[in-house]
Amino acid sequence: MSRFTIGETDFELDGRPVRILAGALHYFRVHPDLWADRIRKARLMGLNTIETYVAWNLHEPRRGQWRADAELDLGRFLDLVAAEGMHAIVRPGPYICAEFDGGGLPAWLFRDREVGIRRSEPRYVDAVTGYLRRVYEIVVPRQVDAGGPVVLVQIENEYGAYGSDKAYLQHLVDVTREAGVTVPLTTIDQPTPEMLAAGSLPGLHLTGSFGSRVPDRLATLREFQPTGPLVCMEFWCGWFDDWGSHHHVTDASASAAELDALLAAGGSVNIYMFHGGTNFGLTTGANDKGRYAPITTSYDYDAPLDESGHPTEKYFAFREVIAKYAPVPDEVPGLRPAAPVVETPLDPGPRLLEIAEALGEASDHRGMPTFDDLEHYRGFAVFTTRIDRGGPATLTIGEEVRDRAWVLIDGSPVGVLARDAHERAIVLPDASGELAIVVEDQGRVDYGVRIGEHKGLVGGVHLDGEELTGWRVVPIDLDRVVETVEQAQADAPAALAGRGWWPGSAPTAPRSFGPGPGFATATFDLDGPADLFLDTLDWGKGVVWVNGFLLGRYWRRGPQRTLVVPSPVTRAGENRVVVLEFEAFADASLRTLAHPELGHTEV
Image (cartoon, helix red, strand yellow):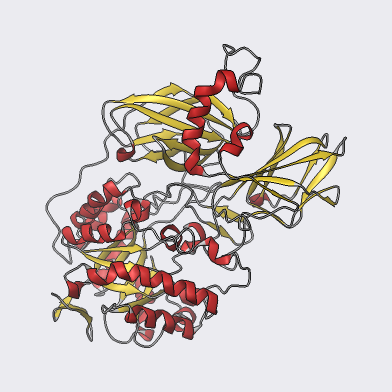
């Protein structure tokens, strides 16, 4: 068994100085069948350590319902790191930011609006304690002194940018040590005096997060960490994208020069991100600093290993720098091959409102409940009521739309209310019939004061100033979608004749895309499993499944144009696609491209 410690000037493994050359790789952003490939490619770039966050909201989607299997098998991920002969750094938060839904904090935690956030509040602390103990059940037997790969564990995450509750930090340390974690504990903050002072405790090793001005950053860090190794725990070599912005890239040679400066100064590093991966499903977070900005499905991050797991110019530039300071394997990974190109028509499916009650558990409410009132923490919900005002009237949301709402009367679209445009009111040309509002949670805020906010139509719904009541609500269970849509299509001629999906009453009438949110399907054949780049340029806004696997959101707004379909999701022979489109197809076809298109890089 080995012993990993912090010496007077260096990290030490069994008494010998060692430099950490790490890369960030989030297991929850990579298909589990591809974990070993990504870890191996990190070693081939010259790295000796893999760092990962732990996403509390994925592991415990509802309180007490713990998951650590399949794509959330953190233990297996760490075992694969060990099998590659590498070390591991685990950063369990509980808050991780990471441009991830809610910063990794589970939404159920904040159903009680009075619960604390990242501070010594009893209800919050109790939940965090239970979470950390479960994580450490996985981590403790995989520490380096037990023959495993884990050499460092982080306490909280950039806490100095949020708060300064030292008792809270000390509680996290106590829980960590009591659970059996023996490896050194670290903190991370941007290297400013204020943040380093607020986010640290005696006995924790302070590290920094930055991607430029290396000498200045290290000098500030050294003031607060006078002994031991200097560590950049997040060396920012790229950046994330949000819908409606541009695809962020950084110059490979400039990033390599900053990495060279860091290593020349004797520093240890964790490259954030080595491989960004994908926000599969509906796991994207959002920022709100006056304008709500939801994160794209792609988390490519302009990282050395691109979203589909292939080396970029930055990979080779970093590899060349690392080779000046540490041994680098001779082997290099191959470049990204052209992906199969597919094109096939989309087949119209049922409208969302036609099958909504088969997609979730309906309930009746006098007033407008939030998603959180319904214990529905991610995705979409349908709200319906009858109105009989007649003539034009103004529909108003009391406080805020969170985050996008499609308004329909008798199944026909009236318009959209969007949070990012601060919209709360819309005119109904004829306020009579069945009012339906389809609401999308586009991602919970992951940074700042709006962490923990509730989702939905907050503050009620009013018509010409009078509150609307008598709501029928269906939270959409995304796990039911594929089976329900395929069954609806099988039953379509008899069950849905004359209801908008099949125009006319004859079962043989040609199908068409009706008004409002609805489904489409397609099938295509492959010779064998392969990475694909699904082209969404001519689609509007929605989500898509391939062989039952929810890839994530697409949006014509961009910048992202293609969705990565990882090879383990595909198969030889027939592959099946289901699309939920909320707006309209400019071209009702399914296409894949030979290479990814993540959008324009200049504004």
